[in-house]
Length: 335
Image (cartoon, rainbow, N blue to C red; front, side, top):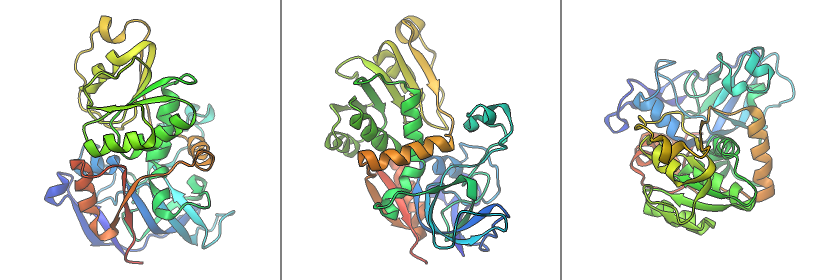
């Protein structure tokens, strides 16, 4: 099969990602073989490609927002059949026995493994997934529209819950790409007032089209104090900016797996009055199931830009440069 491989991590524009031939993977006893139909392009894929995240598998194939159909079953798999449509997301496997897993916080499992980082992902014609970590997908949404929901959507949902937005509250979103524009739809459907702060003009237009009350530059102050904020942009300089925008008792959740260095924080102006700064680490499968249920209830839809699988390097370069709003999705044009 054809697949993309991170040969040597580095700038995506300089050929860090190469289109190569790899064997079709053989599913383990508890795994599904998935024929990829579509795979979302996530900023984490860029971090893997460019070396912002440490190498966990040499020559890894990125991609963890996969929509596909079951093409094979491991010997121990039950409950799935060849031809079922499934989703493959970032969290690939946990030990299921540690203190974190037992208390329902499997996203903190020290032995967790991730699709497109520890194991080859969806920038390929085929991938595998442990059956217990595959998602059953809602009907009535096509493959391309579903793909970004499987990481951007799920992580945005977890970030929203971590930000503890009160009912009818004022939410600030810093950065407005694949994850934020899905998170905004959930927050708006639940009655929030949403203010978007982002660098891209196209992203600001999309925010207003989706119902945001305002859309400004990332370093601007929102028109009113925020009850909660989520930082999606991987820019540490924005942490104090967002903290200053919070009202008393407000919460800032940082949604990314990678963040540039944060400048010193000034206690009186940025943390006092019981403001909170929280991180977001991956997601649980329950987060994914809850979010996918809300997709149907609220009509959450991704704004997508399709690229053929053979142009994954261009899609990542365009993501890095901010050349599109919403989310990019690779479509398997090789069948």
